[in-house]
Image 1 (tube, rainbow, N blue to C red):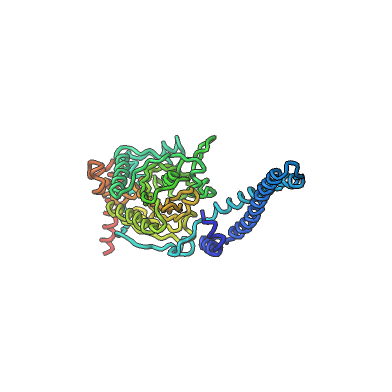
Image 2: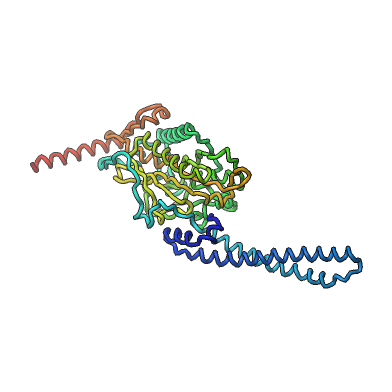
Length: 447
């Protein structure tokens, strides 16, 4: 939530930010119009309450001086106030609700370092490793099914599209990825947290504007509960309406949870396998800090992602999202994308965001600085979304014989160095070798 004082004093700053996100800024004018009327009503209400108190005191004073004093006029005037006060208070409440609805939907202020424009203005910040396309490789879905480690059809029958069964060594790989990420973050001083997998609407609203996101997350029918789309929202809710001691900041949390998303806007996109699914596991970095430490913490959690991806041996890059491609909550977001050699492209593995004091204001999360209460800043970053990471590892570490090498950093968790090839993957290998031989023969004949 944006600081009301900032909207009142610097409306053009908010309008400029809104326009950079593709809006027109009209909500600022509407907010200020309602806010002006709200402040007028508040003045009237405060004046009427003061007048009521003065009249009551005046009546008592006159009675003290003279028990038989004529206070009829004062009492009559006093009796007129409640109806006037009720009318003003009702209008004030109505205006406040309308004003706050607008306030809740105004997105965070875009940081000055963010490129302005739509997704075409996203800027590659840095690249690590060389991504080389593997045209002869096997897609992760086909390969894992051949190894009897992934079941999509049966999952679709019992749960619907974009659900799955993981089996055998891929379950172990999933657990290994989780354990690796948790161990890594714990060594970095993060507190491990497994949060509730469901939240009430008020708790969710403290983290995000529900307008758009409500279409993406699952609601429990008949209950004021939603399945979380990310641990970020539950971690933010941990300190809602609380004051954190200054000495305890920064608070660095590593949240592990399943995540549930409708993926309503992804029809026809990434339909194969387990890259874009309704249910997945994720380890999330989340930080509460003082405003002056905000960007230092941003670099810290971003560097954690850099280290994790390097340890896993994946070619990757960081991409600074343009203003029109960011979510409504962050002031700045950097996506990190892994290279998928079978598909021959970089794809998102996670994102790092500085939400400044936006979530803290929504959730009333403050810290005590020598008796003065101030809003904290919050930051979040995906450490690892495990199913996407499995896809990336399978594409990067599969061998010509259909086996999958296990990254060195995960071998101690898996207790082995390789996932052996299955029958179908071996057949694919033979078919590929025959195809390569035919190509070589054609090239010899041309010569």
